[in-house]
Length: 227
Image 1 (cartoon, rainbow, N blue to C red):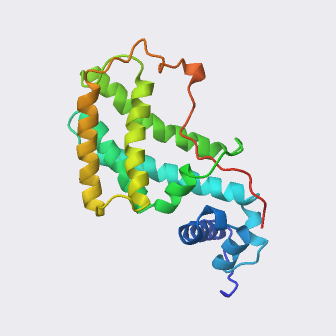
Image 2 (image 1 turned 90 degrees about the vertical axis):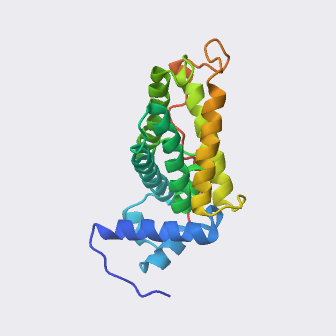
Image 3 (image 1 turned 90 degrees about the horizontal axis):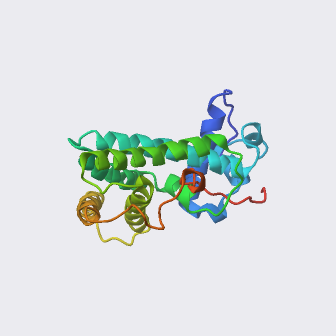
């Protein structure tokens, strides 16, 4: 068993988050327990409760951390684009690159079932990450590179494409290296954009009023029994 360590007030929390991410990578969400996180961090099994109400909150914070890193990755990748549509394609590459580099966060962000709605930071950063994609869609519409109309279903289509690639890649179902996967994402994004040019968005049943739109691509976490 790792020796018990003494942490300053500020770094015990991060040590627990790091231990939680490592644990998810080894045993998956189903094998995740606060007791094991504490053991790996080298602290007592009660120590995590100084910073997290329960394992749901710890997982929600890991998800929020993931959404923050995702937003940075999408923005950084998009800066190389000279046009709005280029930035949209590159944004998708940033999404897949994030998933490949931070697969444990990716799992917690999207693969766990439904959660309580009281983790405001997770909700805010999740919404911010989706808004980045939505803004690139709107800018591409203004450029004339995408059809006019409600940008929301177009953003969902774009998200579905890159999320599907990311999921296949992180689960080992694409026969590509990291670099090849990003090349594949660029190629798929180009095909996606070309196919959308003739798409009619206005008047479809996919158009949603703002009141009916889901606020964010949620990190959904089902309540778990504490261990």
